[in-house]
Image 1 (cartoon, rainbow, N blue to C red):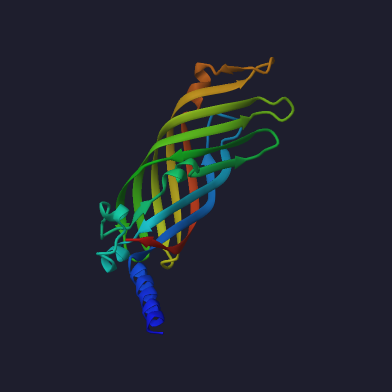
Image 2 (cartoon, rainbow, N blue to C red):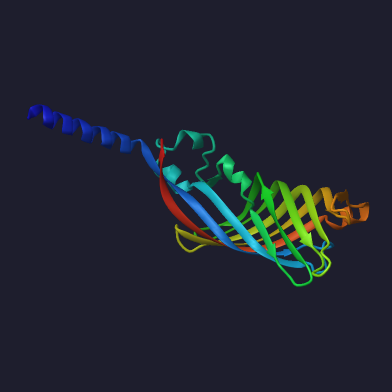
Length: 231
């Protein structure tokens, strides 16, 4: 009987000790509508789409309350004045913006990927945060169809950088909303489109020059959930 009690005490102490080695880290799931200005590609310039924001968060509150429990992978990034965002490498394959713009006369489908941002806070209090950031590099891909009855499709790929202004409203710790405008400057890598024998040819110089910039207005709703991370 004594051995059984000792084993139970040992198991409880081990589980308690394991729990002490973990801390809650919020994850952010953000999604919302986006409206694009894409000049010089098809007959119209305004297009619809979606903006995504998925990342883990190291909040300033978490850093202050768990100074000795911050997960090792976050320690070198600690900044107790602002929250810090992290995304695992595999999330780089998910576009930050998704363009879905069908139409009777023309349509555009595609996405914008980004990998790093440099942010400067303009104003920050308990409820509102205003900031400007440079996002780079950005990779843009567009699949376009300019005519309904005689399809004239193209594939466009470009690399560039985005300047973005964000206005975030904190309703509470679990729900936020961000109204943002970003302007993406593209250096076209290639443009290909069909010719009668169903092979592809490189677009001419004038077509390359037309696809240089993209403006995007987005409204993202952020939902935050706590997860356990090892210290």
